Length: 214
Ligand SMILES: Nc1ncnc2c1ncn2[C@@H]1O[C@H](COP(=O)(O)OP(=O)(O)OP(=O)(O)O)[C@@H](O)[C@H]1O
Ligand SMILES: O=P(O)(O)OC[C@H]1O[C@H](OP(=O)(O)OP(=O)(O)O)[C@H](O)[C@@H]1O
Image (tube, rainbow, N blue to C red; front, side, top):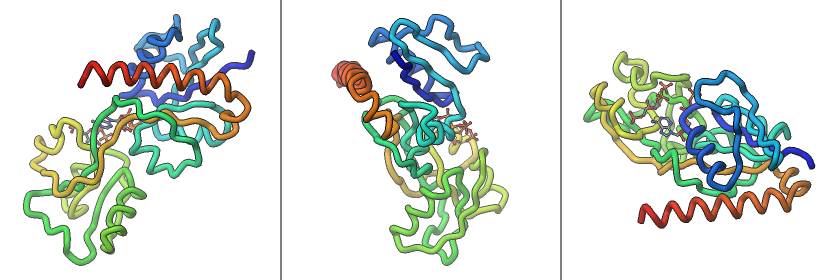
């Protein structure tokens, strides 16, 4: 039997994903948080996880190097990847927001917006019919309005602590974000039965957890 390969972003979503897979009987005996290994296998169920940079998950899927991926909805939208989005996994909950110094005028002409998510940023302001100048940063985005690099930012807010510690506030909410299970379109055809079985088990496990939270 061929392996089914999951691409997971190294980082915030890994532990929840591995716990979820454990719950449906998929085990990676060699996996531990401090390992530097990038591939782990469940030899019994013929399932493999590959640990990639979060923003590369969609690339592995689109190129057929992985069958299934777990990715934040933020990164999925930003990638514009041509994949099937199958399950809202419920974890990795946060939101997209426009943030800046209190009192920032978002309606000013030629608003300068810094973000790790230039596509999301452009789409959001385009929908409002507003012309903006987007600056693509790779991290520490909250710094931009503090040093005059931008008027505001589009970024992820989870606890709100990063904004607060830097004297920034949410100026406008954009949307909620959770982790999503995505599937390579060709794999969905060629490994249909096994992928569907996995999805059903994952959905059952996710909805059981949802019931507990409710
Ligand atoms: N506080 C948070 N900051 C960033 N992402 C969060 C947060 N809380 C939940 N998430 C979700 O977790 C996903 C993975 O985050 P992670 O930090 O592992 O990757 P990343 O933001 O792409 O980081 P990097 O650029 O360092 O690889 C995000 O895409 C988002 O959906
Ligand atoms: O609302 P909070 O709980 O404070 O979380 C939000 C912060 O976390 C993320 O940054 P990350 O740690 O990924 O750092 P980077 O984007 O600067 O690399 C995000 O870009 C925010 O800065």
